[in-house]
Image (cartoon, rainbow, N blue to C red; front, top):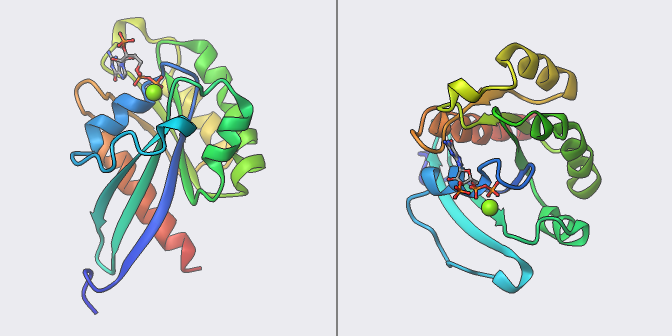
Length: 176
Ligand code: G3D
Ligand code: MG
């Protein structure tokens, strides 16, 4: 069976404080935004990206929460049925890192025990860095994340790798 014949589809969500770069990471990663403003009354947009793997093609259907992300009810609806996730902080903002624990408990409460990876975004802003890579890596392992990546939505560094890694790991885990 070739990879085109075998398509798997995952709903992916992005959790993290406002302004950590969720939308920017998506815009960087996804070339073709599909159904722009789809369900905007519910406060989110949906994107799709295909990832080719040796055994299959993975369709990541990625939901981006909008400006009303402060509302718990909206986040709950946003997360329902998700298969995989990013938990994102901003490397220049200590509070956004402290909160990743809270984001993980919301994730489990709303979507169940799904695979996720931790992302430290804005790595281009090295001069303003507040969260060390070592500290973030340790926290990620303790939280049970599949992996930890630093990224920059601005330069693109690490972005493709992070999404690909998550998609492929999610698929591999689904086989076990
Ligand atoms: P959100 O969707 O998590 O709320 P956004 O975050 O994607 O809207 O990004 C919030 C701000 O951070 C934006 O700036 C955006 O340009 C900036 N940003 C996002 N990712 C990066 C990055 O990797 N590097 C740098 N330097 N900036 C980034 P504004 O000024 O529009 O608020
Ligand atoms: Mg956003």
